[in-house]
Image (cartoon, rainbow, N blue to C red; front, top):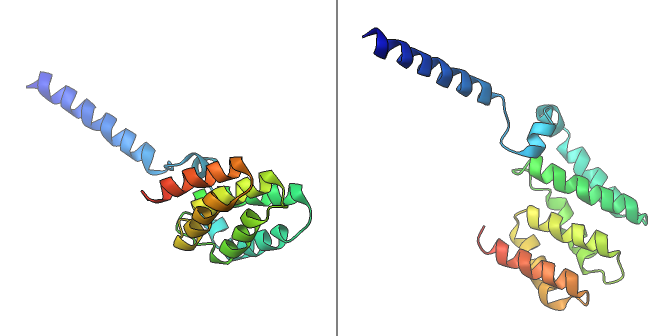
Length: 148
């Protein structure tokens, strides 16, 4: 009886310890890197407003950094819609004169919004963009959005 009971108790202790250890862990890489999500979540509307302001600047580097920051925020807060950014992101994506990196990041950010309006903008650019690389990216994102 001891031979069965001791290993069973040890197995339960190991399982309980691993479950307890995993309760505090996040499921994504971004969440693991940013442990203060609750305090950040309160400020999401302000972050969204700041992204809008930065996208309106003429500084390409600032736009690219804002778009990458937005993509990170979309991963950290997948339930937040960032609705006010759909139109400006679409405008950046459609602007043939805009920087290629900014347009690419705008397409990726739109895709991560998981919005029908954003998906429609991406699908439209899949056939309309003069930039063949961006056109290919939009086609790939459009295929992926069909299976969401």
